[in-house]
Length: 305
Image 1 (cartoon, one colour):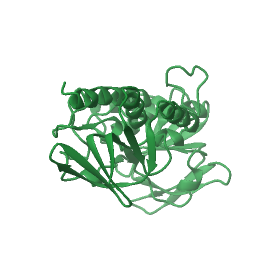
Image 2 (cartoon, rainbow, N blue to C red; image 1 turned 180 degrees about the vertical axis):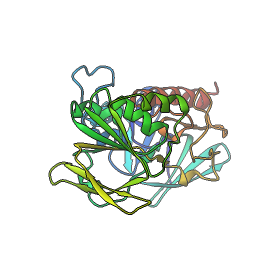
Image 3 (tube, rainbow, N blue to C red; image 1 turned 45 degrees about the horizontal axis):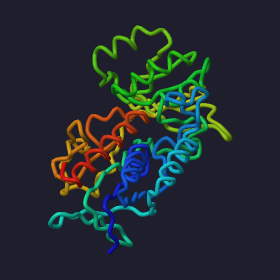
Image 4 (cartoon, helix red, strand yellow; image 1 turned 30 degrees about the vertical axis):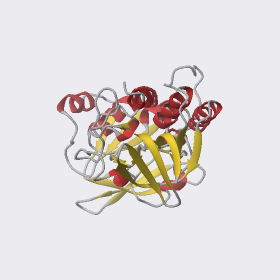
């Protein structure tokens, strides 16, 4: 069994920031990530709203820069998927398929996955017209026609955001009324650049090198039609990566981890940061802040503060 003073689970902006801070504090720290470091931002063609990059930066590059900076200060990395956690006496065991790690504190920054439509070509056209982040990618579709899939607050807010850039925004919703709050609904309904497509789902995505249009199906009549759009923004929810922690830390109804303002969970010595925690802003800058606060709290916990 390998032993570290601190273990960070997840290599997105929150986890990388926490690992950077803990390493700079002089703690022997391990970061466990099952895939590429960077989290959801690696899917963003360009990030324009992260401070310090006035010309924008690709999500992949930003994730790599964060990884490189954390490495510079001695953060240890392992590629592994965490399958469980155990609390033993004054320490914790982080369990993966190949190894178990003993540690004094754990920061859970495992993030979330965008809920996908699960249709043909979705994976292939992601980053080529299919996006899950209007804030990240909306500006790429200036004066173009785009579509948003969903009917909740996120979808309608995305449509409002996109209306500042796009020529026309279709909102495709499988029901005949929105789930979004009334305030958001009123703003969207009064926006001439937003058009609602009711009782419909996306049946097919079209395009070779990039998205050229979507085929939609009316769920009541079964009829199909085509929308010629350059972008589709999927906003049908997020799935928190919290299954491995169920029964170990408290989860809310959505599967996120409640924390206090210092990123402390209900279990002393365990902290959560970024998209995985309840009420996260789900923005890169917010995740970085969470990671810094979680690291400070974890360091204080280890030192008896």
